[in-house]
Length: 196
Ligand code: FES
Ligand code: FES
Image (cartoon, rainbow, N blue to C red; front, side, top):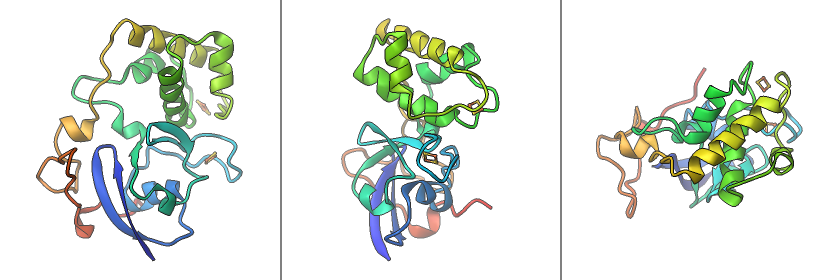
């Protein structure tokens, strides 16, 4: 086992992990972050996409130990007291999903895409999301949603502070609000346990 410390959606977690544990399994099974989805066994679908140090990564291609010391944002950390993140709002407004299985990864990839290119063309959106597969909608509404979100963010729509930071502790974490400058370690017994 290897001791790692990662900050997920604004909350620091210290855990012992097997060296072979994938980040996506650590997020889901040890931290209860089940909004991050496993959609394939081949690193193709992108459903597991999260932001690691601000960059989108497929969390099934990263070992948990490789994330040691980093900040991770999952889809569960995007919304805050100010409401949905503009990308989430645009996916909702454009109905850019059917079953929703791909949606967390699509949203996280889109957040990174817009951060790098605030005014992407249709082609740039399609290329930016090419690592994320949607099995059921066709992509037109997803492209429209990303356009809308980019426009909203250019117009100054606020990106909410992560819910875990602005709205107080996550369930199962200590009462004290995490200190961004000097995070408080989370006791092992306070970390959400695997979801059945
Ligand atoms: Fe499919 Fe990660 S679960 S790419
Ligand atoms: Fe079903 Fe994308 S909404 S896979």
